[in-house]
Image 1 (cartoon, rainbow over the protein chains, first blue to last red):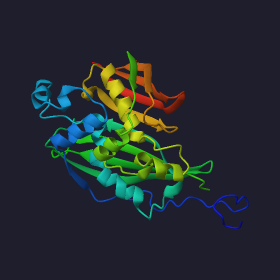
Image 2: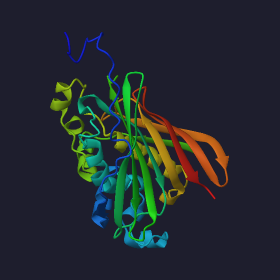
Image 3: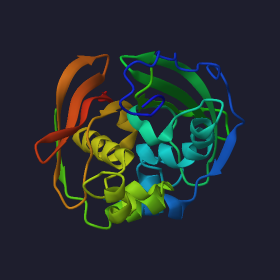
Length: 160
Length: 123
């Protein structure tokens, strides 16, 4: 069997490559559109009229149509994606699962905002034959106020 | 405060969520591909299910999305379209006008999200 991916019980365990730890990626800018919010809100089953009706949103005290909290994945994706795909990080995608996710929200995001997200490799570690790749994204609006901080943990099975 | 939400994503939900989120990984939208890689069928996006957990908590807090300050989840197990998902949660701790809700999402007897913790501003 030698180096076959499975059934190899006598291969020495290779420690997970951690060179990319601390690496940061260029900022990604996303302009939030009212119709994109509508599309997202509809897809996730939101029925609160603030996501669809500008007058209702303003009545509720928003500058414009607000984005549902989990819309964070839409404006963060362009920043987090390249970090996860970075060959220097070296994730084995065939064995990868999205293990856990955290968001911490700040200033609400509304249609018309420009959100800039920066991602870094927060931690790479291994435990019990699994490798943990933790990315942190920080998103700010056009006024420099933090709108969300995301912690994205991807787990790769069959690591050292 | 009690959190409870039931939702049954329809057959084409993963396609709508793919378009809305930009995640077109074929394991979510192509049943044939999903079977080829050993899955029973196309699976829900984990972040869609997390959005249901977020929605359940926001609804419990009265519907204002600004109430949701933090949400962390662990993805454990796959979710499927055309099966009901039940999201439940209850207060774990309460302090300084904020409550922490322990939440989970279950489908067909399996917990597909567990150890979810939502922090809601109630003051």
